[in-house]
Length: 287
Ligand code: NAP
Image 1 (cartoon, rainbow, N blue to C red):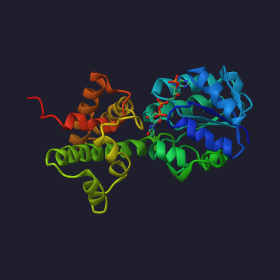
Image 2 (image 1 turned 30 degrees about the vertical axis):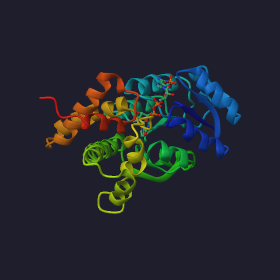
Image 3 (image 1 turned 120 degrees about the vertical axis):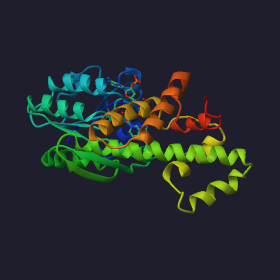
């Protein structure tokens, strides 16, 4: 099997590294080409300068930023991949983009899976991501050996778009947990509680969670290296808010988180980790 990987960012680079480790990776691409050249030299694979360099891949994995980035790559790959190849998108984008991509590639006889991931950069580095897949089961079986390189769990959630729908639910939980952890730890600071004792005490009880465990200590030191960028969380919440409105549920948690990440992004923290939210929680609400 020949695998290509496009998008060598915080998530994509370690994921592609695992595929290379299994001996499946053939070629990598990235918007800033130097990143691909560097990665290719380190891992003994080829660096792509255009979509044509992916032409003989059986599976192409994407982990880019936005809906438009996915659409641009899918459009380019539709023109070069062979019949029977499968494109797997690990970016977090809308259900509409996933369905459009599946349709666009099907016209060229190419499979598509929307397969967003959860588990953070730690999960990507450790090869322990939860992968939420939408699309055809036969396409998943074809791509599975590549996905297994970095998966703790691969769940086939249904047809096209079901992976992104699952990720939308995931992001509601992640955003709500972040709100609670940042607000709670900001309160803990004001109350003068010792973080060395506070963090393990909270973690050992019902309040324990991934974000507290992975980001609690760093946010209390005001270290906000990503991780998961505020701008990406804002993108996700805009998608999720639209879905919640259409579904007719009460979405106050989504609205609050969206307003907070919009404020962080507006003030120049778009590239900071989502734990930078504690900076807003340290201040009284402006009336
Ligand atoms: P990131 O660090 O910003 O990396 C994105 C990478 O994709 C960059 O290397 C970027 O290239 C490349 N890229 C963007 N547009 C491209 C295009 N049109 N063609 C080729 N390459 C392109 O982001 P990330 O944190 O890895 O996240 C990637 C995706 O996974 C996002 O959709 C995000 O929401 C999702 N996600 C992130 C996390 C997390 O914890 N970070 C967890 C789960 C899901 P440049 O070098 O030119 O910028």
